[in-house]
Length: 174
Image (cartoon, rainbow, N blue to C red; front, side, top):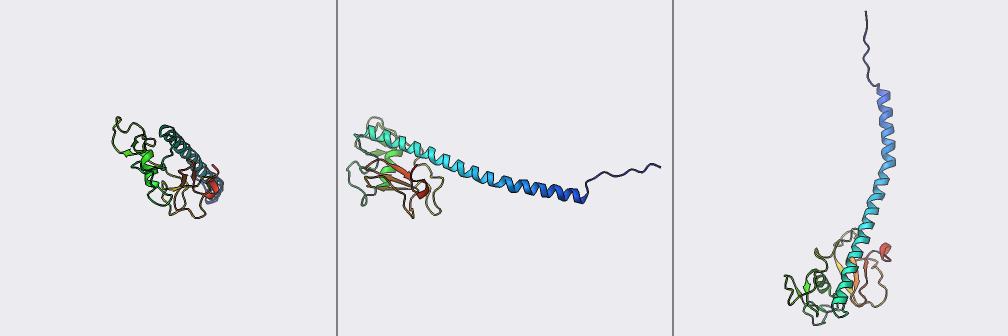
């Protein structure tokens, strides 16, 4: 008589395979977390470059005035003490005339410039918890900008110098 023996994995073999897979997963997961952080930092660099280019183009097309230096109506009166985030955002995201007046619809005769950021202010992928990722703090600082210790906005922008930074202490030098 020929007895057939059933071939299968033993419980010990299965446990060894599970342990090996667990060790490999333990080694691989930190690599993925690091990749996510690297991707966020790359996105931050890219978004900063896009905004800096838009600000520079605005400056050159508007008689050496930076976005946010005048209100949306072109009067030069700030909407609040030193801060004009609505003017800054609208002047980069809408059509403008030479004085900085904005218009949301295409009118190349009266508003020949812009928009410089077609989809508005890009997100800061590393914005602190509780801070809107595309919010901007507009200041009148003439020197180098530094991030706020407790930021209330994701980006910090000087309407005097045109400098924009990520409003995160660890990334303020970018």
